[in-house]
Amino acid sequence: MASGRTFIRQAAANAKHLGGVAVRRFSLAAPELPPFDYVPKHYTGPLADEVLAKRKKFLGSSLFYYYQKPLNIVEGKMQYLFDESGRRYLDAFAGIVTVSCGHCHPEVLDAIMEQSKLLQHATTIYLHHAIADFAEALASKMPGNLKVVYFVNSGTEANELAMLMARLYSGNLGMIGLRNAYHGGSSGTIGLTALNTWKYSIPQGEIHHVMNPNPYRGIFGSDASQYAKEVQDHIDYGTSGKVAGFIAETIQGVGGAVELAPGYLKLVYDMVRKAGGVCIADEVQSGFGRTGSHYWGFETQGVIPDIVTMAKGIGNGLPLGAVVTTPEIANVLAQKIQFNTFGGNPVCSSGGLAVLRVIDKEKRQKHCADVGSHLIGRLTSLQEKHEIIGDVRGRGLMVGIELVTDRKEKTPAKAETAVLFEKLRELGVLVGKGGLHGNVFRIKPPMCFTKEDADFLVDALDYAMTRL
Image 1: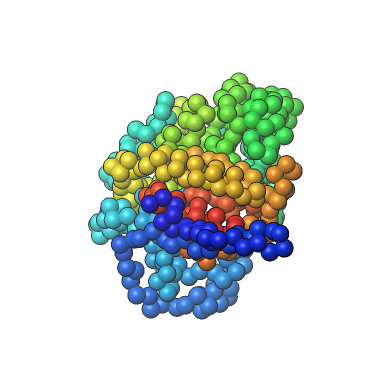
Image 2: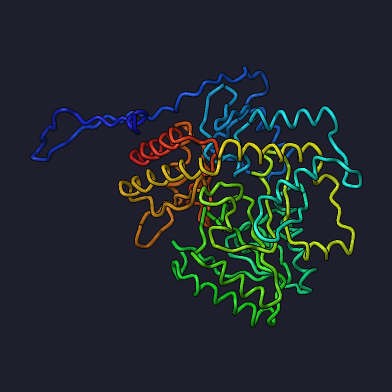
């Protein structure tokens, strides 16, 4: 059955006329999760209130949590999560694209556990086949001359290393990044973002922020050439004609699933290279086939970067990141010692290699294209029904839904987004929030997400919005 399987709208057989006005009564049933053949283990650990109290006492208060009544998630299986009571939730956010293959994918788990029994850690001063095998497999996925791999522990480390490479190779200091971007949590990577995105600002010398080429909210719409002109202005007047590098996510994640104006990266990459700089693609959230149409997000813009950074999805939950670059850029680092104690450790390398194999074996890129097309189609139809949906955007299983109170003015629906966010949780759907105003639902589920899951998600949105 179609959406009627989960979302039942039944008109009353007869319309009653009161005072000359026809009143039609409807019965709207809450949608139900698709069937899933798995029973979670009985949980006997501490409950949510105890965990929250301990967290408030011993962890930094900067660690925020979702929902007015935070969830105590104790188990995960493929695209679903389970709380302390055993209730199942559809994970439509996956911890910001942490999960490529699905929570606790058996093949990935087996690879990790088997390696853990043999050797958990060996630094790169010794030989181990796992890191070499993983690097070979990852390099085979890259276009052009992107053939040299560095392993690190996170996306933050990857982007820090990429910035170091750009400055050493070019001999320049000036870095250019997009406003409303996100590249990590260190002082250097926070500096790459527009500072007013954060509650605190850390001044970073020689970092320049240019307009976000956002087709929905940007002042030039989808005109990439107008946005690119500002990049050239920064090069000419801000960095005296020389630049170290330019970094951008192909689809901004934290920024609200914003896909850059078509053709933007090609124009900017040409400008940056003419100024002596290198081009960095942050693929932490858009890589590994998630967009469906391409394996890497930058391919949607028809470009090949000089440096590519990745994390999260690369390890399916492991603390793993990578930087891939050309031999020419890598040779600059070879002049000095470049070392990462845990980068490329046997356990993470074995898990990462298993992730690549599962993505290929289960044809996850094509799956993302098929399911993502179905999801975006249904969301676009829902947009016609609910005025609060200002924009539906994205590719594959990296989707954004921007909510507004006025479509013409594009006024952010901040309060309404917060209410709907809580209501979706009550219905059993976990989504992310993002965008500068916190009014964008970020849909980035595990890549095993099905069309039935997509229908349930849309039906839940419809149900919640109808009752808003």
